[in-house]
Length: 447
Ligand SMILES: Cc1ncc(COP(=O)(O)O)c(C=O)c1O
Ligand SMILES: [Zn+2]
Image 1: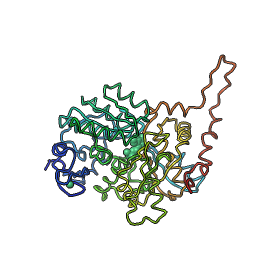
Image 2: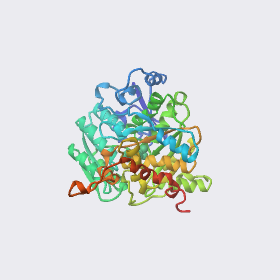
Image 3: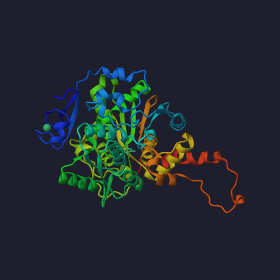
Image 4: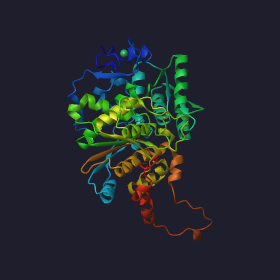
């Protein structure tokens, strides 16, 4: 067995030595062929307490080196990812108190401040680049709606590794620009994300190149699991409720892994309140159907597949959620919910936080924050709870969205056409949708 960690096949329990063996077998279990593995560390678990309580301010993800699947620190490829501040947002607390009579605490993870590509995908990309470097791999493939591709393009370029990216045709233009500018290859596949994944797989197989293995790939999962450690480090406890916009759901799976491995230290896994944009919400639709039927036998295997979804936020548009059966059980076990939010008001939440918090967010973050308002409206948050929102991306990921969010532009010929400006006049306007949220909730759609 590897010195620091090994893998265990989730299906048959077969033990795999480490990445050498895993890569040599085409990222499949040598015994049963399944592609889902579990990473087991040989380091004493108690050591995580020391890392969480360390008096030193961590510089990056690699503060948690002992619980990441890399053997040699020499191979670390990093750029300050994984330690974004978790901020308390009293403005959301005041809203919950005023409109719903709830006294709650609200914390938001500022992944938009991740230095490399301004998303929480930087963590997985840092780990992937480091592990690939450790194993002398020079070429890699990834299919992505955009943010994973952008993060991997950056970190792999830093490690001198060539990346070929396959993105669906509705992916935002900014992604292709960021990736292409670094000399990494971008292929826009005519079709949706499902098609892009199939083409990527075919390309990787044709040339025998390693490919990023999706939502349960240890390179993504193990890096994202550190979020739970950061909650403990920054907040002193783990929250009661976890809110996030999901596409495939890597982050919730990573949270499950963290709480499975370190439950006695981290406490109970938060209730997972996971949202999807309503233009592509197969997991929310499946959940709603199962819930209405009282979660009958086999409910988790019943989910719709959308071909060519037309989402306003394409970053989140996974039309075929192949891991829904796993996600559904995870959410159910946590006492949580999967629900949709209205994508048409993504711009409105972005305006609100830009006004009240002096920050600009990307569209996938907007969907995540809408999850908070939808959850409040649906009664999914209880009095006294600590709520944590894993907000995924900054405005750098979508300049086109930022242009839609801006609302004060005026073209003029001379100074006499420009009235005096008082920013305060916009306050009521930016709150309007949220003060009248019952009109915008998705809870009464399709009923
Ligand atoms: C900013 C942002 N938020 C949320 C998600 C959904 O992430 P997950 O893979 O955990 O479903 C993505 C995925 O692309 C994303 O880029
Ligand atoms: Zn197996």
